[in-house]
Image (tube, rainbow, N blue to C red):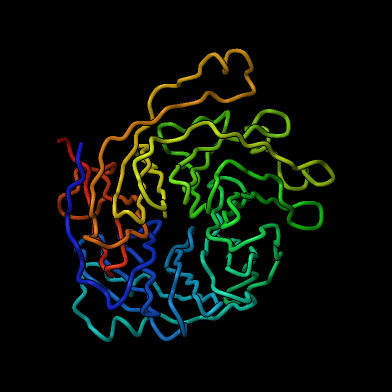
Length: 386
């Protein structure tokens, strides 16, 4: 297979840190060093809106709130140590018509700003149900916020478990379980305890900064209910790892069924084990991994300018599964496509799988990969047979 470029958008003035795909609409949001977030159509690849004026420094991270109808809500995290919440009614999100110019841009409302971090905000993420927002920062903290009602957020917890800059936060797709990764080389997981949120697991295995983490989607072909969603991580140590949970009782399914009230008063420690290390291709820091909900493939990007696609192959350790049913099988991965210099001589900061919405889409399961880099460009790629 090979990666073929579908299109590249005109470059923004400065680097683009991240792209985020809307959960239900054909929209991309970008986070840029020029203090803006741009909204781009996945049908036409035209820019629709520029969100600006809410931050004094680079926007480092963007996240769409899930589970909404009639409205879209975008969260922005900035190097100015604040988090912005932006709202727009869906009837204003005319993804088929990008010719309205300034009138389009006025329809995003800067609803509120959340502050409390003491340094640059590196990542923002909504929980699967949209009730909770997680943010992390160079100040070594992870914050958990709850939206009490519209434009009213309460700080639930400030986690100070990491010893260095926290790079990424990600929520489990089915449970109220939060993961964070850090410059301290570790990944931590958090759940709500009897009174406070607590760190329930520490994942050690990387030997350098863990840049991003992402959970497997329940719709992925490799998802197994008995183990639940796995976690992928990528690092400065040039490795990509996959972690699988062995719960308190040895069954992730039991943990998934237990409501928070039952967990209270009991140990909520979890045991996660490394079950895969993907083939090493990148030669410099790996910044992002994205796990496809349709094909189960993982795509990565790095400081070396490469984009690499991996596919899971049959279990390589079925004996362990037979010997101890509480341990998940180790699995192997292979490289199915890669491209060098995806953004010319520039670093590639983010890659994200997306449903394909354009005129060449071949069906509901057709996908593209969206990438962005230090060149300020957003590019779209398709995976095709060589």
